[in-house]
Length: 363
Length: 154
Image (tube, rainbow over all chains, first blue to last red; front, side, top):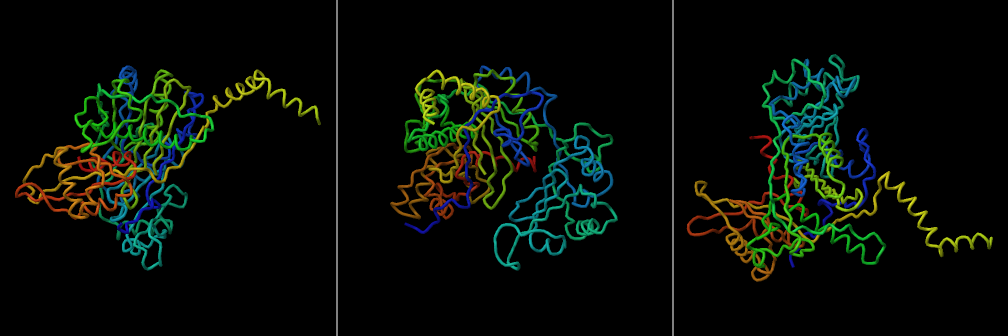
């Protein structure tokens, strides 16, 4: 009726994978295979959620939710130039070139990557999303970002600098140019999220000079969630004609149901008042039989988390939980792109099947 | 030549023989782990929207419930599109304080956002409007970004 765009070219897509995880070696957990690779593909993680049956919650509680295993991160206000100064530069950025376990940090600055300048640091690589004016004044070479067009009309630029390169040293020409840009153009202090990935703590910590706010991620646990559990039948494997359609519906509905639980929507809980009222909502859980009443636990970690940590927790869950149980693990990144949507992965470990999983990667 | 075809036929006809080979393969692939099926979804049936209501006077405190939201949205859609707007199906997934999360058919998304964004209404003397917090074709993206601001400010 109205000429609104209908296509989804610029919108997020979802890749669904049904597979088996195979044998899991505790000493050498897989990193390159789905679904493990999907977790590690997130540069920064903001939220990790776990949904599981109440019966096995005690195992998770005693093994994963102990106080000493809580991840820690910091919030700190710094100008960009502080990154290149003294011990901060040597300890957090340069040491990782020699030994990744001794000095490796990840940082993310506040800002909307479409509007303001936004910086991130990961594996020694500093990425800066700049507006046109800052980019031209800074005088560091980068690439245009986003909208295509002539040079003069490109509003956003992206600059990537690998600070671990041997040429990145005080006194070198290219490096001094960066220092100059940070001292004269990009000089306003910004709020950073800071996460130290090093396995050994250094004393004194170079960050303490900047008065960070220390944060400990305390898992939020919602117990005794009464729901009507879908059967979690693995999708049919035979090459039936209707399979494509069947699997697509299966995947969309199950993903929506898991997201509804993460949203804490009352629509998926038992005894919801609006269930019969189609005026308010016509949402129906997948294969709603009204018979499979179960109780769930929902655990949520919120903070500036690393993908290594999320991967470690997932591997631990796979090893410690009974083989015939189901659980769902949701990993969410930070909002990005023009729409501010975040990349996220949902992994559902299917019950009663040997290590079979369904993975949804929204990107 | 004829012998080899004969052998092939015999394995096909003999279920025990095929079973043994397939089970062997199953063990090796099980140990490695593999993908059984992949699917690339571009156009899901639904879109999800996170809205919050903003009253004109910042002092007034609004507590929405499902029926309020439904009435406000219907009025917005009707103002913008008349009877056609009434036909847009909206499912309320969650309502909490000033915020609500909805599901609508994906094709109606742009239309719905235009209607909601242009609406001024409310109950009694307090005028209010909707603010779109986030929209996505995947509910998990909507849930994922929620609470991100807290990391920087709390």
